[in-house]
Length: 76
Image (cartoon, rainbow, N blue to C red):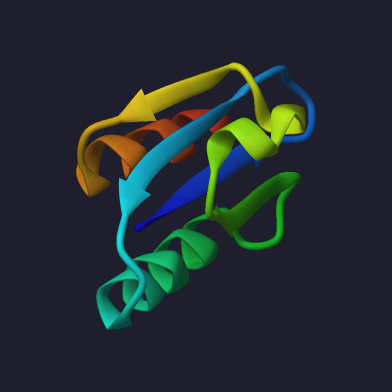
């Protein structure tokens, strides 16, 4: 298990999606990277949200679709 995090450098907090390592994660990560196109949004995979306080507070997403929607909202 791991967590995919999207962080807008210009705001407080981030989006968090609980997921699993593997090809599905790599594919989704690449999709999100293509959406943000090197803007001021960081996408990272972490092992434990409690160990990464710099991304708090977290908005927890329950699906890839919800996570993608939140990332798209960061672009506006």
